[in-house]
Every structure is written in C-alpha cells, then in structure tokens.
Length: 383
Image 1: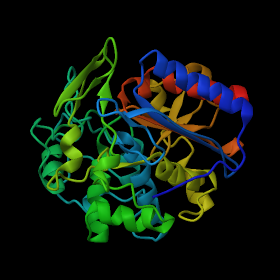
Image 2: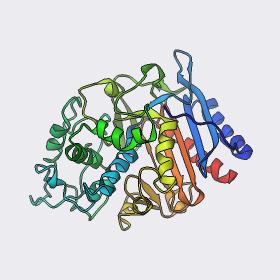
Image 3: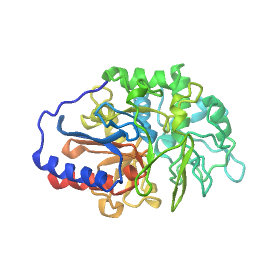
Image 4: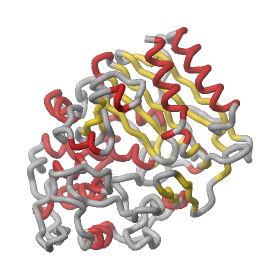
C-alpha cells in the first residue's frame, strides 16, 4: 500500500481545492473522492472526502481502492516501455511477431502491418469494441457476452473485425491496449498481472493496485449520476450520453476467470497511482530512462488525434495537451492527462513538476463532469 504524508501543504491550494470538492459533494454530483497533488516531489494537497459506501455509512479514505477502468492504460504503457528499454520489444515491431493470428483486415480484404507504436497511440485502425450507438460493458468481448474468456480468444475475435482505417492514417480511441497486453504476456511468458507487477508495482513497493482486489472491505461502491443523488450501480449497468451508452460490469473485478484487460481491468488506490505517475514527473526514476519518458510525453500521432479531440495529441499511453484553449482544458501546454469511466481523472505538468490524481466513485461526473475541470482550475489558480 502506498501512503503519503503532506510534506509541504499549500494553504491557497487547500482552500481552492476544498471548495471545489465541497461543492461537488454538496450539490450531490459526487458521492466520494480522493484527490492528491504532488509538486516537485512533495505532497502539497491530500484529501479523502465523501463516502466510499454511502448506504453503509463508510467514509472515503486515502487508502480506498477504486475500479480504475482506463487509469489502467498508463500503468501497462509504462510496463511496455520497460520491455522496450530491455530490448525485448520495440515500438516499430509488428504485432504478428508475437500474435501471428492478429491480422485484422481493411475493407478491401488486405491485412496491413500493425505495430506496437500503433497500439500505444491508438492509430492501429482498431475499433473500440462498441457499435455506433452503444458502448458495451467495460471489458466485454466484441460479441457483447460476459468477458470470462481467455485473452487470446478475445484477441482472435477482435482480429476478425475490419479495421476502421489503414494503421497510422487515423486516430480512434480503441481497445488496442488489450492487444498490447497480449504481446506482454507472450514476451514475458506470464499472465499480464504478473508481468505488470514485476515491471511496475513491485519495484515501487506497491501492493494495492492489481487486476484483482486485495481487500474488498476497502473497495469503493461505484455510483452513477442520477437525481436527486447518484445511484449505486447494479451488477450490469449503463449510462446514457449524447454520444452513446456506456456499459459497466462492476463485478468483473471479482471474476478469477476474466481476461486481464490492459485497457481497463485494474483496481487500485489514489496513492499507488500517484506513485506510478510520479515516476514520469521525475523523468522515469526508478523505472525508465529520461529519453524514454521524453518520447512517451510528446505527441506521437503527428496531429492525428486533433481530428477527433482538438487541442490534444497522444503519446505512449495518454493524451498530450497541445493547445489548452482548443482542448477546453484548464491545463498547461505539454501537460499529459487521461481518466477512467468509473469517474477518474489525472494529469501531469512536467514543466512544473506537478502530478495530480483525482479518483472518484461517481460516473461520469468524475471524468466528464465539472469536477475534473474545477480541480484543474483550482490548482492552476493556486500556482
């Protein structure tokens, strides 16, 4: 378990962030949250607020465990880049080197080369596993059935789906990280969870972030925004948005037979996530070299991301802010950021040595609502 003490609290930041958090709770946009801010390697703000389990009167704690959804992606990306540094994989390598069956076709029937670079940057041409109007439950296979299948079976099914475009010619947020997870398993001859532990969490002394829950009593109940207050999610649930329907399978994290999804299958604490992201803020220490981090935090898509998300590029595992005004984000240029559909957001401002983690148990307010924007505004106003 990662534990942090506030070494140098920032009074102005405390006042502004407390106000943003209190407003979200008072207005019943959130049930609970953990927000951590580190600057220059020191914790300047730490707060657990609201409830982890409202119905059972369990308050949020800094060691509460959350379903991470896409917060999993940067962890797996770091694991992959450690293998790159070890000379075991290379971003230019074709996927078929490890997964010879993975040859999704274009509309004309040809099967172009997909590389690890394409997977890391979501430029492979893969879909998101969803149809145009409904987003299937987190981790569901492309047939919409329960995800208790082997990862290889999952990827073999995905390989039958036509590509949306020629690899490297477009950008579409996808489940490409699941394919990368398959490569990591093949290269390490280990389940993805064991590989990620050996490459990322164990070297940092972290034990709460994994593809299973270490302590169910500390796991936050997931909620979805509703009136007059957020409602607990059911075993299968969904949230309707203007762009479609997000589906959820909260019990997935308890299924020992479920494939370990590099796209969003982990659970963990805010402290562990901060510790992992802080390695990037420090230039990679102790996991990666500075040159590797430099490549990871710059736009690797040559502007392709902006076609779908103006003002953002995409590096190896996360978005890169190229134009804050166009992106509509209260972040600095060259900051990196992402989040998760259970209600999470995080960002790193490398130039200010700033790392921010805001995990909530309320979808989608914690990801797409006012909350992450209010957090960002409060922090930059304090700076």
